Image 1 (cartoon, rainbow, N blue to C red):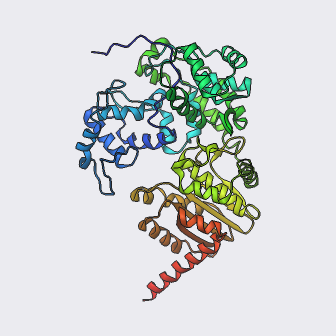
Image 2: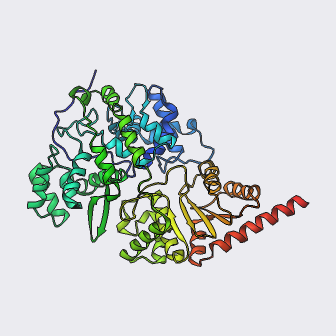
Image 3: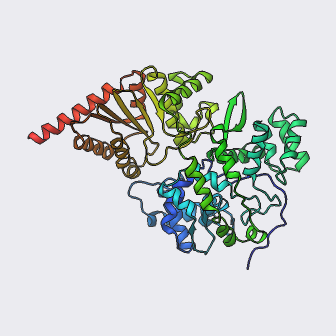
Length: 512
């Protein structure tokens, strides 16, 4: 028996708040992809949720995970810890409802079909994201063009694509404040003229004034924090990863169109996309309809791919401008790196942590080495140099170079021993070896801490890759070690000393 739906009403735009950083969806989808084709019954859902705990996507102080933990070891704990969760989205209470909190947004964006007691199916777009053929910015940008407020996953009267609406607003108005952005989330019909009339005739000087306005005009009933932070933040983070917007903090937060992507956005908007009333009510039909214009979207990605890639000097100058505008010093940046979770620099709060660590290290390198070397982070930047999404899978994180030196810095927040060894070793070497350079090549692997097995891999790789074409030096670093060495501007000498010692130690062992 199907549950009776409540009568739909107009509501504030929102996404699931359990996953604040949309870049995490790639890892989540990658983990559950091996279950594609299986029925999402209680047994399969429990296996999936256990695996999400083991791999650190979900955490609980009551569930201790180590490198030897297996699914069967924690099943009873996972059931117990999630026992108070209420049924949601057609999933029963408990761990099954927990699963839904991590899959609701991908379902709304038509990346997966995941219904209780139905077969799990991945869209073509999701498969391309998992394989690395398309990156997060590309995938979220085209899926946002397929979004609709009214869908099988939202019981609302709002019936339009919010992403198309807000992009057209920014094409028309250039820039809106965070307070005006909050008001945009209450649009009932996606009328651009109506919203522009509101922000042109009403002052929204602060959050409290904005909350009072939406309570009066739209009868908003959620708590103040939900209206002004929880819902707006998760929507803005998702909007940001599409590459459509630039977020500027200068006392207040402003959102403007990312000029780097303007032509790309205009091309996306040319593709008409809509759902029938029947598709908006049926998860099966909604998912099937979500792939009907894929070829056109993929063609646009290929046309515009790499158009916003800049050379190292342009990147460096953008970094230096960001440093100047925000009065950053090496000490401030280093403190922000070591205390990442404390959000030390307000202007960068919307950058997700894995991307933010690459950004901070790029800023530090620009200060310390910018006079002599080009600095080229390979994340995707917006028009003012702020990072949008990670580097594509076929290149390294940060490149530093001149005519005599090539230096690759690979950065990760991974702490898990197995994940660090599996994800941050052979791929890093592949990026490093791809760069053809005939003189001195340096590689720094930087992590919260480096496991012994990871360091052994790099030592072995150093010995194995000695050749006559170029001098090769490398070293794995903890954040603290890398910061100390960079503050002393001693990185290359340090990597050379480390590498020489590794080679000499190998020779001593070989001669015995």
